[in-house]
Length: 448
Image (tube, rainbow, N blue to C red; front, side, top):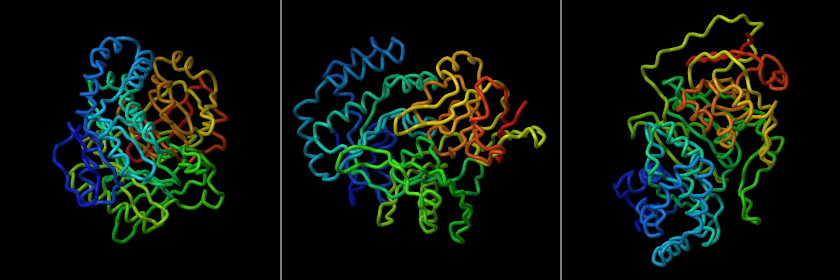
């Protein structure tokens, strides 16, 4: 079993992606310069050896010929009921005991977080792990997440091999005041840096919940354009007493105030810009600020979906009375006209969707394509909207899971904008015909 330490003063081992996976390899590099939550990485060899010793490598091909949902459930059951060797348990226990705080146990597959494939939201992250038995189980859950139905389908869609290997990143969990994602450069403007943030854990950003959006043109003069969302009503946090993740209401005064201070915006922008220069390609960074305003870098990876030579779409001339919404938060260009499917609201606390109709049946009915109208696009929604050709996410920014998946799948994407009518999602019905047009600079939703 190979272990790499994420520890101050310990140099990067230069053994690469095939050993530590995309996320782990990048964190080892970042750890030499930036403030990264401390911990360790379990090599991908450990996963492969565990598969062989438990004979799961012989079982996987038989199971993967089944439909993705059935295969996923069967694989997870087999993984959770297979044990680690005594020797590996002793090594893992030694490393576990050295970290006194609750842990974040994260995937780091060999194919993940590369220049072509992000695997955004496909693999598992388990937060708040606080005892050793739970830790061993969380490793196997991360392993099994290579074969969630969504991950299996993702590999099929991207023409990737299903025999991906995976390392596991184990880190002290940060209890952040605010978290976010930064892009350098912004996909739509190569002269600016894009930052999106919210209160609490970064799961809010990944899920596409309402966030604050900052655009920085000059990190020296502090040239910042701010779009603060007053709809930041929920935040995720780790409840130390109950030892579990929870969602709570954001205090009223915090909802309308920015989740980052000006000096934090500039500090974050400088960090992602330096990473972009070091890698020599556009970069995507996850970050968090703790109660002492200390910046932690949680992840950095090449930013997928930026095409330097992309042909620019010209928006059609639509009369003002037909435009229902417009936005500068765009991620994937294109024009689509056709039926809509409407998600009116998302309840994160109770994990429920308020949908105008049956989402599964609507996805089947409009198998030739449709425009998805929704406040947000959390990962749980993705598997039910496989035939969407375009989407307008009324509260999402452009750095979350939805935008990443839209870019990789070629789905036209428009994020939070200016709705010309109030309660837009309550006034449109599934099956109505509408149009959406998205260019690099702007997107519009319009009636036909």
